[in-house]
Structures are given as C-alpha cells and as structure tokens.
Amino acid sequence: MALKCAIDLGIPSAIHRNGGSASLPDLLATLPIAENKRPFLHRPMRFLTVSGIFTSADDGVYQLTRVSRLLVDSIPLNLLPFARGAVNENSRKMSETSGNFHTVFTRNFRSFLCLGEWFRDGGDTTPFAMAHGMDVWGAMSLDRALATGFSASMAANSKFLAEIAIRRHAEAFMNVSSLVNVGGGDGSMARAIVKAFPHIKCLVLDLPHVVRGIPADGFVECVAGDMMDFVPPANVVLLKLVLHDWSDEDCVRILSRCREAISNREGGKVIIIDTVIGSQSQQIYEAQLFLDLCMMTVTTGKEREEKEWHMIFLKAGFTQYKILPILGIKSLIEVYP
Ligand SMILES: C[S@@+](CC[C@H](N)C(=O)[O-])C[C@H]1O[C@@H](n2cnc3c(N)ncnc32)[C@H](O)[C@@H]1O
Ligand SMILES: O=c1cc(-c2ccc(O)cc2)oc2c(O)c(O)ccc12
Image (tube, rainbow, N blue to C red; front, side, top):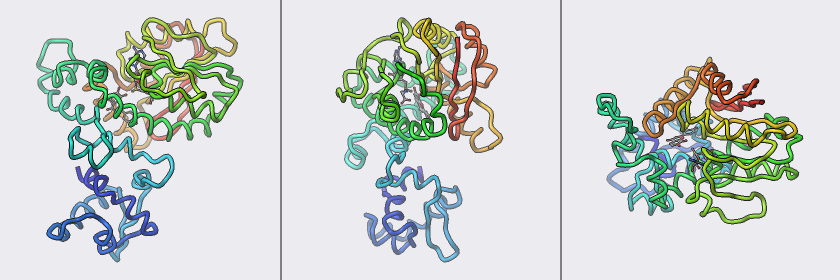
C-alpha cells in the first residue's frame, strides 16, 4: 500500500525529473500534496527506503534503486502499467489518475481473502470464482475494461522481458521461419520478436475477446481460437506465462496440441517462458512462491519445479528440454519432440 501511494503520487518519476535524487523539500515542492499532509510524507518514504524501493543518503536525500527505476514514466520499457495493474483499485478515482485502468489484480486481493474458506470448502471452484462468482477468464470475457487492463499489464511485462530474452537468448529465435504465440495476449511479445527477427512469420492465437481488440499493424497476424482444441502449425510454438495458469492435466493437453502444431516441421520446438521454482536468491525464491500462491488463488494453475515440468513434457510426448534463465523469476525452456 505504501508502494501504491508512491506510484499514485508519481514519486519515482519526480525523483528522476529532479536529476536522480530529491530531498523531502524537493519532493514537497513538486508533488500534489495538501498543505496539512506535508508533515506525513517522510513516513511512507522512510518505510519504502528500508524496503529497498528508494535509498537515502545520511543527508536525507532520496535516490532511486534498481526497483524504483522501473517505475519512472519517462524511462522506456518501464513497468509502471504492470505495477499499476498490481496495486490499483478498479474505481472511478483511480481511473481518473491512471488512465481508465481496471485490474484483475485487485480482484486477486478479494480472492485471497477467500483462501481459508476455500480450503474448508469441498467444491472444486477457485478462490477467485468464490469471490467473484465466475472464473478469471469468464470475468474478463464479460468485463471489457478488466480485460483491457489485464492485457495492458501483461503487455508491459512482455515488452520489458522480450528485450532481455531476445538479447540473452537470440539463438533460440535464429533459424526460425514461423512462430505461433499461443495465449499471446495483445501481441506485444510477438511484435518484439518480429522487429528483432523480421524473417519470422508470427501468428498470435488467443481468445476471441482478446483478439478482437488488437489493431492490425502489419507485423503479426492474430487469430481467435482455443488452444485446448487446436494450435496452428508453425516451426516454433511460444507460450509465455500461459502454462502457469493451468493444472498439470490441462498443460499436457495444451502441450499435446503444440506438439501436433510443430510435427514434421524443421527445427520444431516449443519455447516456454515461465517460472522454474528454485533459486539461490532468497528474494527470487520468495517471489516465485508468491506467484505460485497467486496462481492457486486466481487460476487452476501453479508455478513448477524442474521435475514437475519434466513430468508434463514426458506426458505430452516430448523427449528433451533445456532450461535457460532469463531474469529474476523467469526462465526460457526449450522443449523438443
Ligand atoms: C497470463 S496471460 C499471458 C499473455 C501473454 N502471453 C503475456 O505474457 O503477456 C494468458 C493468456 O492466455 C489466454 N488464454 C486463456 N485461455 C485460452 C485458450 N483456451 N486459448 C487461447 N488463449 C487462452 C488469455 O486470454 C491470456 O491472454
Ligand atoms: O495476478 C497475476 C499475476 C501474474 C504475474 C505476476 C508477476 C509476473 O512476473 C508474471 C505474472 O500473472 C497472472 C496471470 O498469468 C493470470 O492468468 C492471472 C493473474 C496473474
């Protein structure tokens, strides 16, 4: 909530505009803070500094850390839309300040409040459905603003990650002539791939209500469909943050469709961008386990350890795989028939 407050007030951007460091009087001079609230600002700032969002020199001057640099609006590929998605309320007040942003993430919060009840309940619904009366995909198909907000959050994540994944693992996309991005959302990831490798013909497959909102741009082609039933043929199938939404049985079904899509194709492989649980870093490990709880609460999915990934690959008929770390909690997994 302190981070949400800092994002709402635009504090990371204000520090950046001030040349990368700002004292409390500097911040008070530029931020829209009511006169009677000025004596309070040092308290969330003190908490966020101890939490690693800002640093503060002894002289009381705040500076950005690697985390808060991601929240500066003027820095290209910032994660502000993703962070807003994570902390904003779907309310009129927030819509005014952050551009009509409706979020699935606030719904997550209410879903988390049902977790204890979910454990006691013998039904097979998700905590999200307990809180909202329908599953997350149903909620998004009915609420256009919610779907658009989710798509914008995931798109910011994709643009940021695509840049790093392509730079660090360019070889994964070389010698690829066609690629289908299954559950590709608004096509941000596919677009970044085509821009880096213009020879690749890229197709995005997603649900009808998602594909309907994507304007044609000449870079990627978008088709509506259900990945449980059919995946269009290509040399490479890319699944980014898709399998973590689904149970092991559903993943085997999706991956089986992907295997059919690449069968008899030269260099056929599936590229998965997702979490592989397990890290030497306590912070990363904690984030992976937190995301796993999100998946348990919002979807029917989970984050997986390597042995769990291995099991579903074998069940879907694949023989080999290779795990390449990308950044933080995410890895790129190449899976071969
Ligand atoms: C967590 S989002 C990931 C979006 C995108 N890959 C990214 O990383 O930004 C999961 C995506 O899967 C899509 N999806 C869910 N069920 C699907 C289905 N049965 N067939 C195709 N896409 C589906 C959702 O609409 C959503 O765009
Ligand atoms: O609530 C979420 C959050 C994520 C998420 C968070 C952080 C990351 O680095 C990646 C993804 O993903 C979600 C998701 O895929 C979904 O279908 C519903 C909710 C969430």
